[in-house]
Image (cartoon, rainbow, N blue to C red; front, side, top):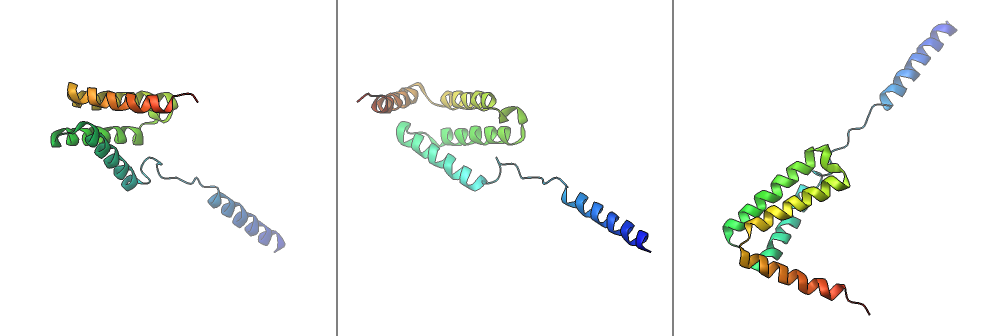
Length: 123
């Protein structure tokens, strides 16, 4: 009888240990707070609109570009590295700049130069 009780106890103990050892599947961190991500993208697009005066068509194209790159980063492991994310961000910036007209690009670069010199001064 003792052997039977110990055998049952051993089976219960080992099965309980196995159930707790199951892997915990975490949700994708890129998709956790999509609402906050969209709000931040809207903020960036509005800021760009203040600087260069975007048309409605350009705003929609930039939103499509942002969404495309969000989908790429969310599902592809290749972009989880620093180099991959950097390359992806450069490609995204290049596509956004291709949406702008030459006059708008000049305004944007002039705005960036103005603030770049402000924060890189010595003293």
